[in-house]
Length: 150
Image 1 (tube, rainbow, N blue to C red):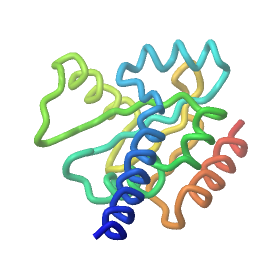
Image 2 (tube, rainbow, N blue to C red):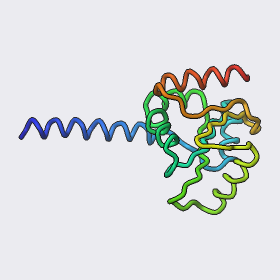
Image 3 (tube, rainbow, N blue to C red):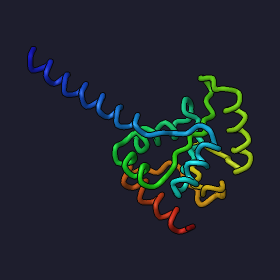
Image 4 (cartoon, helix red, strand yellow):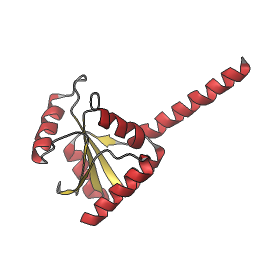
């Protein structure tokens, strides 16, 4: 009994630690805020066009890459995060919905997930999406895309 309780406590602690680590990342939802931070920090914007509650590949990308300590470390050093969500079940403020629709049209987003890297003026630098291989593979390829266009 005590052994089972100890194993359960270890598992719960690991889950809580992982969720706290991913919760530390700041994802902007307002385009203008992301542009301002990118200008201030001289970093590129990683804009995640996602269907967070219905798109299987979006959910997989978030789970396998974005919600990991490796991605968190890379993101804090390299990018400003912007989530542009197109949910089907959860309601968003009307201003966010309108903003996201306009940005999807502006950048000609045709599928989800689309990861758009842009500079502090909103100019597209590169595009990416889901890629298997976990956070190390994803960030390595993202880094190459960003540097290739810079």
